[in-house]
Length: 426
Image (cartoon, rainbow, N blue to C red; front, side, top):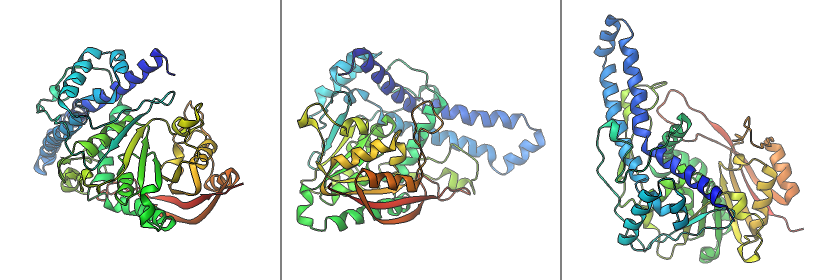
């Protein structure tokens, strides 16, 4: 059980993420203003040449598009109270404002999202049902004034956010491209498509899909999980980062029609651009309506740390051992501090005959930090998996980008390792 102080720290961290979304606009405008200052520092004749080719006009356009991005981001965090229970609301630093927001929402919204808080893991489960399409309308008008971009309907206390926090928000915009736009289909097909094909090959009988439980840790904005649920599997996504949980909740619950929003995710860097058209292009999302899951679909998302959620529990009824028919890890296993424990957890939650489907690189996330970080090679990962009790099959390499810009002069390609693995009974 978490102490009040630990819960207060979690709530503070959560609200800092909310503030990062709200302060995206002022921060991005400030960065673009720096470019204008630099323009005034060069010789007049050079400024005139740049003006002749539309350089300064493009900066004005970037400002306008930052405001459009900020509108979407502010909607995503318009009412953070729905992610907290009553105790957390009271612990919040600006609890009065948040409680008022929560009371307003609860008074006007029919229950649609089930919240479940687990001991130690402090997780939260959201269940998405295809027949529950009535959703609260949280949209508000937002001023185009940069000084007001960080404000939502309520006025919570503003916290200082770091450049790293803002960078994560910018990354979230690109995650929308990857998971919920037509342009992101290329990346999705490179990774999600072979993973889904492997799942269907392992469970070819369509009539049994509703009884097959699929876990997807590190689910990001949950498109892979949505696709699996669409095929009829009981699917649960797991995500730890609030930078992913907030927008995934929004896109799954609050979008009402295809291509409802347009964002401009590539405007934050002017390096390696071919021309203004590629830099300033808008990306619309969602490319498919999340509420279009077939009747009877079972799709949920649980927030929390993967190892805590699926590790050994004190109470057997809470333990997940042997309860999952498939675990699908896409760009996930390199988030481990201790890869051996990740492998053990995946192994223990798989049911007999279950399958682990993996696709991703080994960009160890905790390398060169103060946290524990055990970095191993690909061959060592597979050797460890074998020792833990997996039989690895269907190995191959998939060349893929990750939240890339297909129109940029610069692109990174991962040689992602793909495999399926079955649990060996000993």
